[in-house]
Length: 230
Image (cartoon, rainbow, N blue to C red; front, side, top):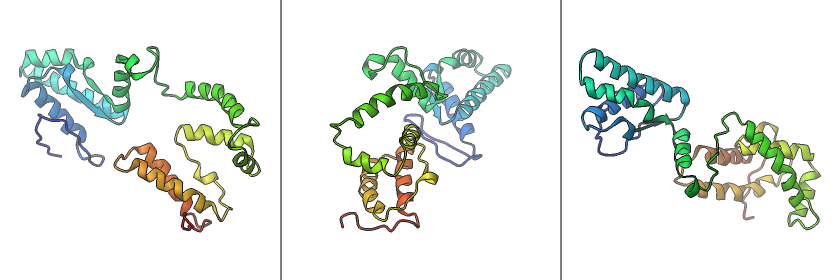
């Protein structure tokens, strides 16, 4: 990949695997350091995975070390190398989290908040909140009493719990969704339309998964897709 871009604006690179995205980003970082004279800690270079972020930082460090060995821009290269750990070369979610931690009051989070990367704390929170949510949903005054009677007439409460836990991680278990109800398409179609309107122009990966999951159910051979207004 050959990339010659202006450094006077933010840059986004989208390309297939193996096309040289990391190389292109490393070259832009070096240009920002030595052509624009920007300090390393002022740069932000983001990617999706920890592996890619680690590789990006290693390649930038290797390039700076190479310049030092060849006596090219030695002082600036050494200064950049020493401050590379203060630069935002990381994953998108790690960078977003660092901003939230920097301004916890404005973000409305605890200063002690941590990223639950392994999902351990998420399980604990779910176990704490699930009984309280059920107590609200299944009491005598619930506004969704008829909906719950219909649901629990078809599946066990334990299945509802499992589905709820999976949906928190946007894990939609399509393989376990029976579709015996001929009217299911009419029930789901309005929700699909609403989801599509919400994500229009906002290609968020998780929201798109939900819309795709709903669409997949609607297009199931067991379901006859009808006009939701009819």
